[in-house]
Image (cartoon, rainbow, N blue to C red; front, side, top):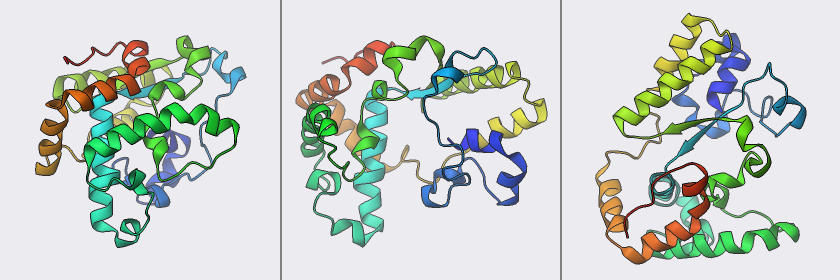
Length: 230
């Protein structure tokens, strides 16, 4: 969303001393709701518009989200520690969260019908195929796959550069976007010792991995990610 904000108003973004990596500070993000994306069927079929989405490998995305929201954030914010439903009340128990996240996703369609309020960041852990009305408009999107893997990350930014150029974005502006987008965001969890500990714990636990595959099965299929070995 930060890239779209930058494209939306380059001068205002820079005047506010914003950077793409710094936009991880959600409450202070540059555009707020000015260009909040909604699925617009007219625009989806307008050949002058480019629609792209950034997708992440499901297990990598899940672990990054859990480390940020359920491990690092509560350690920094004592107020969050007092919320009993935060991360389903699992605290630092990864296996607890994996199971309760799976159960919550199963229950969501009925809860949505009942207009049940979304609780404690669970939308950060929804399957990616639930967004952007992919079931109807999947073919209208260019898919960019984000990864912490250096080679795969390089491929994504090359593809983004091509797409922006295709839409006649100024080359100098594209260079600024790519340069800032490749900076490490403030809330990045990769490379932290706890992240590696929980990554190893997750990947070595077949029960947790089976549950994750069940939770994100359609993400693996829709976006052509290889299934993990179980």
